[in-house]
Length: 302
Ligand SMILES: Cc1cc2nc3c(=O)[nH]c(=O)nc-3n(C[C@H](O)[C@H](O)[C@H](O)COP(=O)(O)OP(=O)(O)OC[C@H]3O[C@@H](n4cnc5c(N)ncnc54)[C@H](O)[C@@H]3O)c2cc1C
Image (cartoon, rainbow, N blue to C red):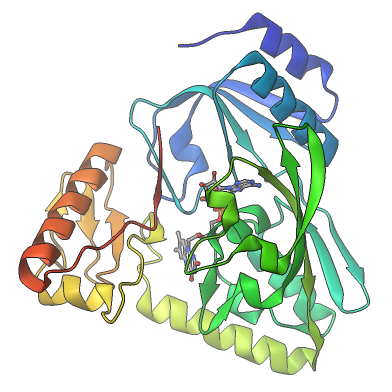
């Protein structure tokens, strides 16, 4: 385990930052998997987040910025360094038809806020268990909507220059479940969404419909990281997994959900090793049966 008294001193002196030592990462992942992290830091303001990342960068200390951990698989061995969790950054501000949200704002909370203010565009995001930062990073989407459809701009911290920048929508180079942030190590600080006025009751009806569809189709009773694999050009990945006879296939505590073959679930006490092994089995089987190469959507954090 890595211990650093200077780092602890730095974090103690930063008023807008909490930290913990030796915490199980399973508590920070919707998969409920992951060993001990040396440090977990919770900045509460944008400036604390930037100062911490700047410090870690200068000192050469390994770190990873995460949101709600709903698209992650932490390693069984844990993390030697600092996991920076953004969920304490949760300011939302409305200006006419735009909403500003800090990176740690829950996507579902933001969709509800927009609905209450009669602003339409984020209905699709209701029920996605991520944060604004994670959603911009991933270009999260569902039911025909994506972050790229409603994002005006994001703000990020560039570790190379130690400066804050703003990036307008086209600069994000959005693709299917990806953005430019996957290619650089910048920290997403906040985002501004451009929405359209609409009757709150109509927005709510649509959101409720999406939530009902999630509950009906997804194995929400078990821990998971959502869809394990990306969509595959010209094929439905979940359908192929089903047709390959893999529904219910289990490695240790990890299982291909019986309810939705696109989800690998944690049936209880699954390890990251179980999940990775199951992913390998699924990939090999789909290659053999359909001659397709599928790619994980879930990110491995080691
Ligand atoms: C039950 C379930 C249902 C789901 N349904 C959907 C769905 O319908 N559509 C969909 O798109 N996804 C879905 N997901 C996946 C997941 O919720 C999304 O990908 C979400 O956007 C991830 O956000 P997060 O805050 O949890 O990010 P995390 O999982 O914490 O992180 C994801 C990636 O983003 C990076 N990151 C996070 N925050 C920042 C930041 N501030 N700056 C820089 N990098 C950052 C992390 O380093 C990591 O690489 C689902 C997951 C679950 C468990």
